[in-house]
Amino acid sequence: MMAIVFSGFLFVLGSYAVVEAFPSAPSFASDPAPYTTAAERFIPPLAHVLKALFITSVAASFIVANTQTSRVIYHGAREGVWPQRLAEVHPRFRTPWLASLAFVLPSLALAFVGARVWDIGTASGFLATVGTLGLVLMYGLTNLGLVVLWFRERGHGRSRSPVTWLVVPMVGIA
Image 1 (tube, rainbow, N blue to C red):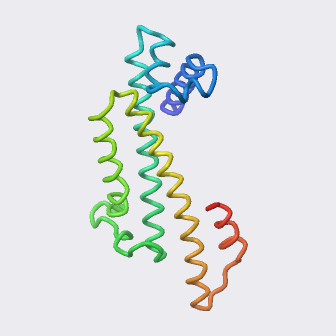
Image 2: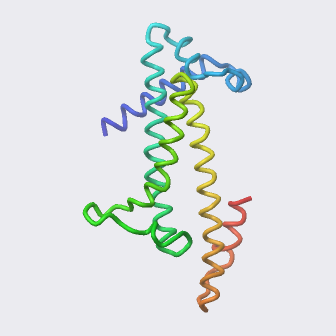
Image 3: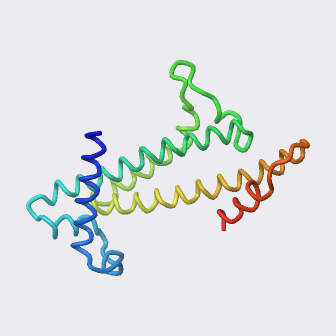
């Protein structure tokens, strides 16, 4: 509970810094390193600490996204939507290690390149944007997987509701 409360406090503090630093969305969007600017404007003596909090927030978001996405890949592979090999679990730890690697390795490569090219503030903004695009792609592909599974089940003589397995996912893709 303390971790949740502390994380919530950091989230509110970081959000407040961004709102105070940028009164309008266009000014935030046009800044090349908005989180660095927010940290420097909010509490200049603690700018390095706030920048570290921003990058920690991005890292935590990536950890959650990686866990969630690897589970989506794993379950999709179990259902036959993705290659069956991605549904393998580690013999010792019983975790979907290949599904995790399928998402984590590209994420790490992107983070490594981003950290080498930009300063920490710009890298965190870039990685958050790319992470968001990854989540949108994951949800789109998950919805597409439901459509594929609906047709596959129908081909085997099993019926599923066309509204929940075809219409809703198509709306989600759109």
